[in-house]
Length: 230
Image (cartoon, rainbow, N blue to C red; front, side, top):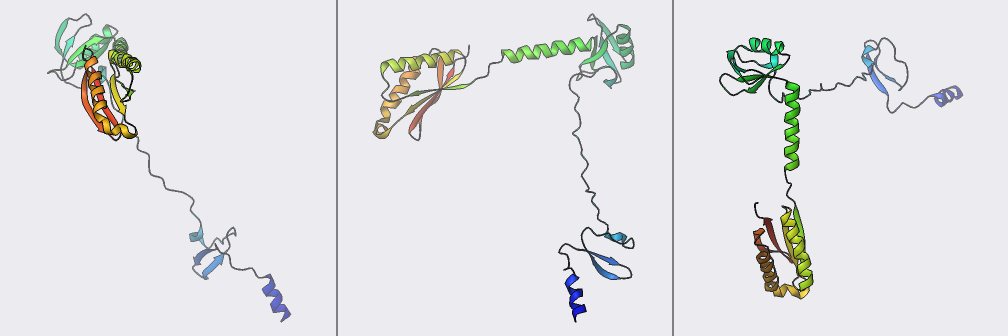
C-alpha cells in the first residue's frame, strides 16, 4: 500500500500542451513539451518554416522618350544635330551617326509615320526639360479659398476693414467665401443679411464676380466670390 502510494506521489500529471504522436509499433503516446522525442517518430517533428507569398514588385514604367537601342521602329526619319533633315534611315544607321558625333539618338515624335528621331545630347535635353517644367510649376497659381466673416449689424468701419481683405484676396487670385452668421433673434431678419451680401457683391464687381449666390446653411448665409480673369 505504501509502495503504491509512494509511486503515485512521484507521478506527474499529464501535460496540458502535450504533443500527441502516433508511432507505428506503440500506438498513441504522449510526450511532454520540451522532451526529446524518439528517433522512431519522424512525423512528430515541428515545422517552424512559415510559407510566405512571393513579393511581386510592380513593373517599372519607362518615362520620357526612347533613346538609342530602345527605339524599336524599323525605320525612322532622322534630324541631324544641327537641325538638318537627313531623311528616312534605319535606327542602326541613326545610332552610328549619333556615335560619330558623340551624341544620342532620341525619339522626339513617336506617333509620326515613320517616327521622328533627332541626334542630340540626351542628358542636356532632359535637364532643360526638367528646368522648363520646374519654372512652369512656379508660375502656376494655386487658387485658395479665403473666408471673411460678417455680422448682420456690421458697422461702417468694420465693413471697410473686411472689404479691404476681400479686395486683397481677389487681387491675389484667390476666391473669397463671405460668411454671415445670425445669432438668436437675428434669424428673424435674414433680409438684412441678404442686403449686406448684395452690397458686398456690388462693391467688388470690378475685380470679382459672384459664383454662388447667397444661401442659408444652418444659421449662416454664405456667398462665394471669384476673381475676374486677367
